[in-house]
Length: 358
Ligand code: UDP
Image 1 (spheres, rainbow, N blue to C red):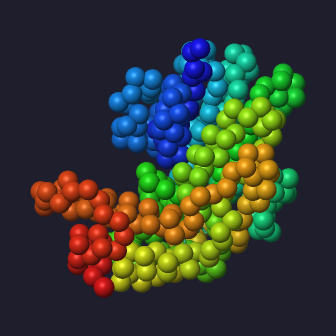
Image 2: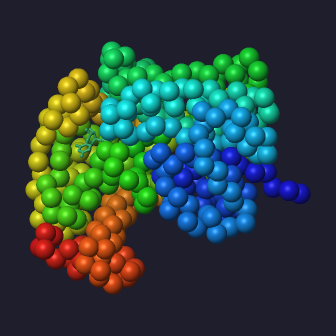
């Protein structure tokens, strides 16, 4: 029997490319649609070697392209979105349009072809609700829609509402997944996410930029555990019409996180406190605490995270070291850039002996 093909929108991105690798490893054919706005072709280097993989550069706003690809696939995992607080604050209109119109295009097309949909949403849905742990039914607490962060939250809520209404009125087979903070290889520091930024700063011996008091807390899940949750849900008939939090429950303040990363990198970096105003400009609002309740995901699938924060930080530091090695190598024409990356502090000391000597 021919295996069903998966359409992964945003498949050249951070989470998407890891999902693509995992689907291909399971022997499932995959088509990726990505406009490469934040996604990178390098993320698909391994996938592109394979015969059961196809990459299409294009936008989820292109309805006829989406429709053509939807026709040939059995399911769609819709990950294409403008993500990252920094990007959303800097380009709020583009983010809003991609996140609402793009999703509407994908959902309409999935409905037309009667395809199963996994829709990526976000913990930003809960807004400033800092009570934790948050269940899928927890309230959304938002500030003014003129604050880009809340317009992003609203755009993703519109996506969820669309999926739910198509399900109720037309029987669309959709599952919503709300990603909490996710970290791992291939996550670019360019869009503001805290762990790749701190890891890079520590490896370079620069101060780690902690915003606000640093007492705000988050839980960080390794991308490999996120992919395992997605794979568990992707074909689960009981997951249709349901919404799931995907996240870690290992909570840490941002200040403690900075210190853990400095220690792990063997760095002499200091911590520099910046106001939100300095970091993001006026009117920015953060949430004090964000902790997911993942009981529902565990009950439906038996999923458990298999990596802890130490694993997450080891990978983040190794990634930052590899990046710094490559950069140094390029600058100096140094063959060290070609050598395989080492993990952790040893590599930091070897490669960046100057700023990170301990
Ligand atoms: N943050 C920080 N320094 C940075 C980047 C982020 O202190 O260089 C803080 C940010 O204000 C937030 C937390 O780290 O309180 C997590 O930020 P991120 O953008 O990674 O995720 P989110 O805000 O969506 O949880």
